[in-house]
Length: 378
Image (cartoon, rainbow, N blue to C red; front, side, top):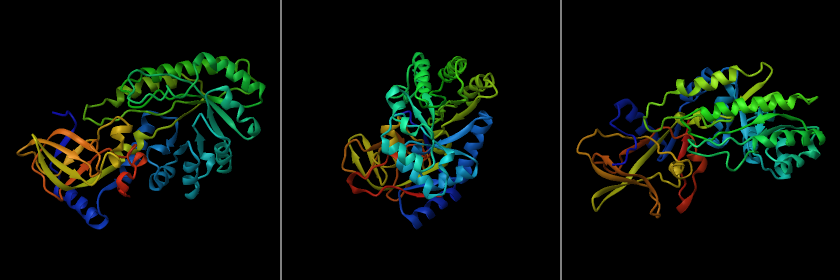
Protein backbone atom coordinates (compact mmCIF):
# COMPACT_ATOMS: atom_id res chain seq x y z
CA UNK A 1 0.00 0.00 0.00
CA UNK A 2 0.93 3.63 -0.51
CA UNK A 3 2.93 4.85 2.54
CA UNK A 4 1.17 8.20 2.34
CA UNK A 5 0.03 9.64 5.67
CA UNK A 6 -3.72 9.03 6.09
CA UNK A 7 -5.67 10.03 9.18
CA UNK A 8 -9.05 8.54 9.97
CA UNK A 9 -11.89 10.15 11.90
CA UNK A 10 -12.38 13.71 13.05
CA UNK A 11 -13.83 15.34 16.14
CA UNK A 12 -17.41 16.57 15.85
CA UNK A 13 -16.77 20.32 16.40
CA UNK A 14 -14.10 20.41 13.68
CA UNK A 15 -16.26 18.42 11.26
CA UNK A 16 -19.20 20.73 11.96
CA UNK A 17 -16.95 23.73 11.29
CA UNK A 18 -15.76 22.31 7.98
CA UNK A 19 -19.30 21.40 6.91
CA UNK A 20 -20.50 24.90 7.78
CA UNK A 21 -17.76 26.41 5.62
CA UNK A 22 -18.73 24.19 2.69
CA UNK A 23 -22.42 24.98 3.18
CA UNK A 24 -21.67 28.70 3.05
CA UNK A 25 -18.88 28.89 0.48
CA UNK A 26 -19.07 25.69 -1.51
CA UNK A 27 -16.22 23.28 -2.18
CA UNK A 28 -13.27 22.94 -2.68
CA UNK A 29 -11.76 25.34 -0.16
CA UNK A 30 -8.34 26.36 1.12
CA UNK A 31 -8.63 27.72 4.66
CA UNK A 32 -5.86 29.88 6.12
CA UNK A 33 -5.18 29.75 9.85
CA UNK A 34 -3.96 33.13 11.07
CA UNK A 35 -2.88 31.56 14.36
CA UNK A 36 -0.80 28.84 12.71
CA UNK A 37 0.83 31.28 10.28
CA UNK A 38 1.96 33.50 13.14
CA UNK A 39 3.12 30.46 15.10
CA UNK A 40 5.29 29.31 12.20
CA UNK A 41 6.83 32.76 11.87
CA UNK A 42 7.59 32.87 15.58
CA UNK A 43 9.04 29.34 15.48
CA UNK A 44 11.44 30.36 12.73
CA UNK A 45 12.41 33.43 14.74
CA UNK A 46 13.30 31.15 17.65
CA UNK A 47 15.40 28.87 15.48
CA UNK A 48 17.11 31.70 13.58
CA UNK A 49 17.35 34.68 15.93
CA UNK A 50 18.85 37.86 14.50
CA UNK A 51 17.90 36.79 10.96
CA UNK A 52 15.58 39.10 8.97
CA UNK A 53 12.91 37.19 7.06
CA UNK A 54 11.66 37.94 3.56
CA UNK A 55 8.59 35.82 2.80
CA UNK A 56 8.85 34.16 -0.63
CA UNK A 57 5.54 35.31 -2.07
CA UNK A 58 5.64 32.69 -4.81
CA UNK A 59 4.81 29.95 -2.29
CA UNK A 60 1.29 31.28 -1.66
CA UNK A 61 0.63 34.73 -3.15
CA UNK A 62 -2.32 35.67 -0.99
CA UNK A 63 -3.28 39.09 0.34
CA UNK A 64 -4.27 37.83 3.80
CA UNK A 65 -1.01 35.94 4.23
CA UNK A 66 0.96 39.01 3.18
CA UNK A 67 -0.97 41.27 5.53
CA UNK A 68 -0.57 38.94 8.54
CA UNK A 69 3.16 38.48 7.97
CA UNK A 70 3.67 42.21 7.46
CA UNK A 71 2.00 42.80 10.82
CA UNK A 72 4.60 40.49 12.36
CA UNK A 73 7.44 42.54 10.88
CA UNK A 74 8.21 40.21 7.99
CA UNK A 75 9.62 41.59 4.73
CA UNK A 76 9.09 40.12 1.26
CA UNK A 77 10.96 38.26 -1.46
CA UNK A 78 9.62 39.21 -4.90
CA UNK A 79 10.51 37.80 -8.29
CA UNK A 80 8.05 39.37 -10.72
CA UNK A 81 6.13 42.51 -11.56
CA UNK A 82 2.94 40.77 -10.46
CA UNK A 83 4.28 40.07 -6.99
CA UNK A 84 5.39 43.69 -6.65
CA UNK A 85 1.91 44.82 -7.71
CA UNK A 86 0.36 42.56 -5.07
CA UNK A 87 2.39 44.28 -2.36
CA UNK A 88 1.63 47.72 -3.75
CA UNK A 89 -2.10 46.96 -3.72
CA UNK A 90 -1.83 46.40 0.00
CA UNK A 91 0.31 49.46 0.68
CA UNK A 92 3.49 47.53 1.48
CA UNK A 93 6.56 49.52 0.59
CA UNK A 94 9.07 48.13 -1.87
CA UNK A 95 11.74 49.19 0.59
CA UNK A 96 10.78 46.05 2.51
CA UNK A 97 11.58 43.74 -0.40
CA UNK A 98 14.41 42.06 -2.24
CA UNK A 99 14.06 41.10 -5.91
CA UNK A 100 15.53 37.62 -6.01
CA UNK A 101 15.12 36.52 -9.63
CA UNK A 102 18.67 36.39 -11.06
CA UNK A 103 17.53 36.80 -14.68
CA UNK A 104 15.51 39.91 -15.52
CA UNK A 105 14.25 41.89 -18.46
CA UNK A 106 14.81 45.63 -18.38
CA UNK A 107 11.07 46.09 -17.89
CA UNK A 108 11.32 43.88 -14.77
CA UNK A 109 14.04 46.10 -13.33
CA UNK A 110 12.13 49.30 -14.05
CA UNK A 111 8.90 47.89 -12.61
CA UNK A 112 10.71 46.88 -9.44
CA UNK A 113 12.28 50.31 -9.07
CA UNK A 114 8.90 51.97 -9.57
CA UNK A 115 7.57 49.76 -6.81
CA UNK A 116 10.39 50.81 -4.48
CA UNK A 117 12.44 47.62 -4.64
CA UNK A 118 16.13 48.48 -4.95
CA UNK A 119 17.98 45.29 -3.94
CA UNK A 120 18.47 42.87 -6.85
CA UNK A 121 20.00 39.42 -7.14
CA UNK A 122 22.28 38.51 -10.06
CA UNK A 123 24.47 35.51 -10.74
CA UNK A 124 26.55 36.41 -13.81
CA UNK A 125 28.24 39.32 -15.57
CA UNK A 126 25.58 39.72 -18.27
CA UNK A 127 22.90 40.27 -15.63
CA UNK A 128 25.19 42.57 -13.68
CA UNK A 129 25.62 44.78 -16.75
CA UNK A 130 21.85 45.16 -17.11
CA UNK A 131 21.99 47.24 -13.93
CA UNK A 132 24.48 49.79 -15.27
CA UNK A 133 21.77 52.37 -16.14
CA UNK A 134 20.43 52.09 -12.57
CA UNK A 135 23.67 51.70 -10.66
CA UNK A 136 23.10 54.81 -8.54
CA UNK A 137 19.78 53.40 -7.34
CA UNK A 138 20.43 49.72 -6.71
CA UNK A 139 22.32 47.36 -4.46
CA UNK A 140 23.17 43.84 -5.58
CA UNK A 141 23.31 40.42 -4.00
CA UNK A 142 25.43 37.94 -5.92
CA UNK A 143 23.88 34.47 -5.90
CA UNK A 144 26.26 31.55 -5.42
CA UNK A 145 25.47 27.94 -6.26
CA UNK A 146 25.65 25.25 -3.56
CA UNK A 147 23.91 22.08 -4.65
CA UNK A 148 22.50 19.64 -2.11
CA UNK A 149 22.16 15.98 -3.04
CA UNK A 150 19.50 15.53 -0.36
CA UNK A 151 17.19 18.36 -1.43
CA UNK A 152 13.84 17.33 -2.93
CA UNK A 153 13.88 20.46 -5.11
CA UNK A 154 17.28 21.50 -6.47
CA UNK A 155 17.38 25.30 -6.67
CA UNK A 156 21.09 25.65 -7.46
CA UNK A 157 21.04 23.90 -10.82
CA UNK A 158 19.23 26.70 -12.62
CA UNK A 159 20.72 29.69 -10.79
CA UNK A 160 23.91 30.68 -9.01
CA UNK A 161 27.54 31.21 -9.97
CA UNK A 162 30.40 28.96 -9.02
CA UNK A 163 32.00 30.07 -5.72
CA UNK A 164 35.34 30.33 -7.52
CA UNK A 165 33.86 32.99 -9.83
CA UNK A 166 32.78 35.32 -7.03
CA UNK A 167 35.99 37.41 -6.76
CA UNK A 168 36.08 38.14 -10.51
CA UNK A 169 32.42 39.18 -10.60
CA UNK A 170 32.90 41.40 -7.55
CA UNK A 171 35.91 43.07 -9.18
CA UNK A 172 33.92 43.67 -12.37
CA UNK A 173 31.09 45.20 -10.34
CA UNK A 174 33.58 47.56 -8.71
CA UNK A 175 34.89 48.56 -12.14
CA UNK A 176 31.31 49.26 -13.26
CA UNK A 177 30.63 51.25 -10.08
CA UNK A 178 27.86 48.82 -9.05
CA UNK A 179 27.63 48.06 -5.37
CA UNK A 180 27.50 44.36 -4.48
CA UNK A 181 26.02 44.45 -1.00
CA UNK A 182 26.56 40.78 -0.28
CA UNK A 183 26.12 37.17 -1.30
CA UNK A 184 23.07 34.93 -1.46
CA UNK A 185 22.43 31.23 -1.93
CA UNK A 186 19.62 28.68 -1.88
CA UNK A 187 20.63 25.07 -1.25
CA UNK A 188 17.26 23.65 -2.29
CA UNK A 189 13.99 22.74 -0.68
CA UNK A 190 12.99 19.92 1.65
CA UNK A 191 16.48 18.74 2.48
CA UNK A 192 16.47 16.92 5.81
CA UNK A 193 20.19 17.49 6.23
CA UNK A 194 21.47 20.99 6.99
CA UNK A 195 25.11 20.16 6.15
CA UNK A 196 25.02 21.91 2.76
CA UNK A 197 23.41 24.96 4.36
CA UNK A 198 26.19 25.11 6.95
CA UNK A 199 28.91 24.65 4.33
CA UNK A 200 27.40 27.43 2.22
CA UNK A 201 27.35 29.81 5.17
CA UNK A 202 31.02 29.14 5.95
CA UNK A 203 32.11 29.45 2.31
CA UNK A 204 30.17 32.68 1.76
CA UNK A 205 31.62 34.16 4.93
CA UNK A 206 35.11 33.34 3.64
CA UNK A 207 34.38 34.84 0.22
CA UNK A 208 32.95 38.01 1.74
CA UNK A 209 35.98 38.42 4.01
CA UNK A 210 38.40 37.88 1.12
CA UNK A 211 36.60 40.33 -1.18
CA UNK A 212 36.25 42.95 1.53
CA UNK A 213 40.02 43.16 2.04
CA UNK A 214 40.42 44.95 -1.29
CA UNK A 215 37.18 46.94 -1.27
CA UNK A 216 36.35 50.50 -0.29
CA UNK A 217 32.65 49.54 -0.21
CA UNK A 218 32.58 46.21 1.64
CA UNK A 219 29.84 43.61 1.48
CA UNK A 220 27.74 43.35 4.63
CA UNK A 221 24.77 41.11 3.71
CA UNK A 222 24.41 37.33 3.59
CA UNK A 223 21.16 35.88 2.27
CA UNK A 224 20.88 32.23 3.36
CA UNK A 225 17.83 31.52 1.22
CA UNK A 226 14.98 29.28 2.31
CA UNK A 227 13.98 25.67 1.77
CA UNK A 228 13.78 24.85 5.48
CA UNK A 229 12.09 21.44 5.70
CA UNK A 230 8.68 20.42 6.92
CA UNK A 231 7.30 16.99 7.77
CA UNK A 232 4.60 15.97 5.27
CA UNK A 233 4.72 12.26 6.13
CA UNK A 234 4.62 12.07 9.94
CA UNK A 235 8.30 11.12 9.88
CA UNK A 236 9.07 12.83 13.22
CA UNK A 237 11.32 15.47 11.69
CA UNK A 238 13.66 16.84 14.36
CA UNK A 239 13.84 20.58 13.72
CA UNK A 240 16.10 21.12 16.72
CA UNK A 241 18.71 18.85 15.17
CA UNK A 242 18.26 20.45 11.75
CA UNK A 243 18.60 24.08 12.84
CA UNK A 244 21.27 23.70 15.55
CA UNK A 245 24.22 23.47 13.11
CA UNK A 246 22.87 26.45 11.17
CA UNK A 247 22.60 28.46 14.38
CA UNK A 248 26.19 27.57 15.25
CA UNK A 249 27.43 28.61 11.81
CA UNK A 250 25.58 31.93 11.98
CA UNK A 251 26.92 32.65 15.46
CA UNK A 252 30.45 32.49 14.07
CA UNK A 253 29.79 35.25 11.52
CA UNK A 254 31.13 38.78 12.04
CA UNK A 255 28.82 41.03 14.02
CA UNK A 256 28.57 43.56 11.18
CA UNK A 257 27.26 40.97 8.68
CA UNK A 258 23.50 41.36 8.24
CA UNK A 259 21.84 37.95 7.69
CA UNK A 260 18.54 37.56 5.86
CA UNK A 261 16.51 34.55 4.70
CA UNK A 262 13.72 33.83 2.22
CA UNK A 263 11.30 31.36 3.88
CA UNK A 264 8.16 30.41 2.00
CA UNK A 265 7.08 26.83 2.59
CA UNK A 266 8.07 26.78 6.27
CA UNK A 267 5.80 29.71 7.05
CA UNK A 268 2.74 29.03 4.96
CA UNK A 269 2.47 25.27 4.34
CA UNK A 270 1.16 24.28 7.79
CA UNK A 271 -1.14 27.32 7.91
CA UNK A 272 -3.53 26.19 5.16
CA UNK A 273 -6.04 23.32 5.18
CA UNK A 274 -7.74 21.98 2.06
CA UNK A 275 -11.37 20.84 2.07
CA UNK A 276 -12.67 18.75 -0.81
CA UNK A 277 -15.96 16.91 -1.27
CA UNK A 278 -16.60 13.48 -2.75
CA UNK A 279 -18.79 13.95 -5.81
CA UNK A 280 -19.03 10.36 -7.00
CA UNK A 281 -17.71 6.81 -6.66
CA UNK A 282 -17.20 3.73 -8.83
CA UNK A 283 -15.89 0.18 -8.45
CA UNK A 284 -13.14 -0.47 -11.00
CA UNK A 285 -11.33 -3.80 -10.76
CA UNK A 286 -9.76 -4.29 -7.35
CA UNK A 287 -10.17 -0.66 -6.32
CA UNK A 288 -12.94 1.56 -5.05
CA UNK A 289 -12.62 4.89 -6.82
CA UNK A 290 -13.75 8.14 -5.22
CA UNK A 291 -13.97 11.36 -7.21
CA UNK A 292 -13.30 14.70 -5.51
CA UNK A 293 -13.98 18.28 -6.55
CA UNK A 294 -10.32 19.23 -6.09
CA UNK A 295 -7.59 17.90 -8.31
CA UNK A 296 -4.00 17.51 -9.41
CA UNK A 297 -4.36 20.54 -11.65
CA UNK A 298 -5.83 22.50 -8.73
CA UNK A 299 -4.89 22.60 -5.05
CA UNK A 300 -3.00 19.31 -5.30
CA UNK A 301 -0.77 20.59 -8.10
CA UNK A 302 2.19 20.53 -5.72
CA UNK A 303 2.23 16.74 -6.03
CA UNK A 304 3.43 17.30 -9.60
CA UNK A 305 5.45 20.49 -9.23
CA UNK A 306 6.68 20.39 -5.64
CA UNK A 307 7.33 16.66 -5.10
CA UNK A 308 5.21 16.40 -1.95
CA UNK A 309 2.14 14.42 -0.91
CA UNK A 310 -0.15 16.26 1.48
CA UNK A 311 -1.34 14.40 4.60
CA UNK A 312 -4.97 13.43 4.07
CA UNK A 313 -7.70 13.06 6.66
CA UNK A 314 -10.84 11.01 6.08
CA UNK A 315 -13.73 12.12 8.25
CA UNK A 316 -14.97 8.55 8.78
CA UNK A 317 -13.35 6.13 11.21
CA UNK A 318 -10.91 3.40 10.12
CA UNK A 319 -13.39 0.53 9.78
CA UNK A 320 -13.90 -1.88 6.88
CA UNK A 321 -10.83 -0.53 5.09
CA UNK A 322 -10.38 -1.43 1.44
CA UNK A 323 -8.00 -0.55 -1.38
CA UNK A 324 -9.06 2.74 -2.90
CA UNK A 325 -8.09 5.58 -5.20
CA UNK A 326 -8.89 9.27 -4.74
CA UNK A 327 -9.27 11.00 -8.08
CA UNK A 328 -9.84 14.56 -9.19
CA UNK A 329 -12.76 15.61 -11.40
CA UNK A 330 -10.97 16.37 -14.67
CA UNK A 331 -11.06 14.24 -17.80
CA UNK A 332 -7.35 13.46 -17.53
CA UNK A 333 -6.00 10.08 -16.44
CA UNK A 334 -3.13 11.48 -14.35
CA UNK A 335 -5.57 13.41 -12.17
CA UNK A 336 -5.04 11.08 -9.20
CA UNK A 337 -4.65 12.55 -5.72
CA UNK A 338 -3.96 9.29 -3.84
CA UNK A 339 -3.56 5.81 -5.27
CA UNK A 340 -3.52 2.40 -3.62
CA UNK A 341 -4.56 3.65 -0.18
CA UNK A 342 -6.75 2.01 2.46
CA UNK A 343 -10.03 3.84 3.03
CA UNK A 344 -13.31 3.10 4.78
CA UNK A 345 -16.51 3.13 2.75
CA UNK A 346 -17.16 6.74 1.77
CA UNK A 347 -20.26 8.34 0.35
CA UNK A 348 -21.03 11.25 -1.92
CA UNK A 349 -20.87 14.45 0.13
CA UNK A 350 -18.21 13.17 2.52
CA UNK A 351 -15.30 15.53 3.06
CA UNK A 352 -11.62 14.78 2.47
CA UNK A 353 -9.28 17.10 4.36
CA UNK A 354 -5.79 17.95 3.12
CA UNK A 355 -3.29 19.24 5.65
CA UNK A 356 -0.19 21.41 5.14
CA UNK A 357 -1.59 22.75 1.89
CA UNK A 358 -0.24 26.30 1.90
CA UNK A 359 2.90 25.99 -0.20
CA UNK A 360 2.74 25.53 -3.97
CA UNK A 361 -0.95 24.60 -4.08
CA UNK A 362 -3.02 27.60 -5.11
CA UNK A 363 0.20 29.12 -6.45
CA UNK A 364 0.60 26.42 -9.09
CA UNK A 365 -3.06 25.59 -9.71
CA UNK A 366 -4.46 25.81 -13.23
CA UNK A 367 -7.92 26.11 -14.76
CA UNK A 368 -7.72 22.85 -16.72
CA UNK A 369 -11.17 21.77 -17.95
CA UNK A 370 -12.18 25.38 -17.14
CA UNK A 371 -12.68 24.44 -13.49
CA UNK A 372 -12.60 27.41 -11.15
CA UNK A 373 -10.49 25.95 -8.34
CA UNK A 374 -10.58 26.25 -4.58
CA UNK A 375 -11.88 29.36 -2.88
CA UNK A 376 -9.41 30.74 -0.35
CA UNK A 377 -10.73 31.74 3.07
CA UNK A 378 -9.17 33.23 6.20
